[in-house]
Image (cartoon, rainbow, N blue to C red):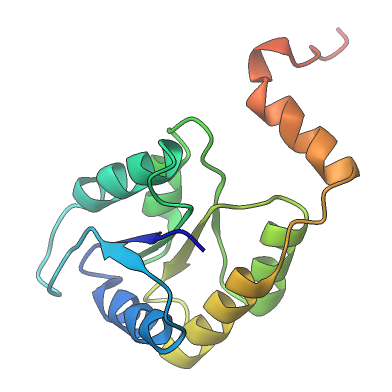
Length: 152
């Protein structure tokens, strides 16, 4: 796997550090976009460059951590080609890859435990995209300008 982009704010710093340990154990390359402490900071300062790295293909995937996961997902999904999801359990992580080919996983440091986060990340990394009907649906997101309009 190409490198993973990591990003966190103060609310997700501890979680990001646990993810780094897991990635090191699995010999997975990553780039840490910060933050580097639990001091209060603004999540877009870290989510923007990390999401850009995924959007531009520099990083294959990303793992973002903040207090709830919501802020990081909002920022990341502004970038073309990014499919960021907030996952608070293993089932959601599996389905986000299997059906949505999510390329950024976001977790809430105030929502999931460090042990649960490690299980979520492991499943998310190991689950392959199923393709098929799900690929057709993703194509409709990629080509949103050409998507059908609802009947009036």
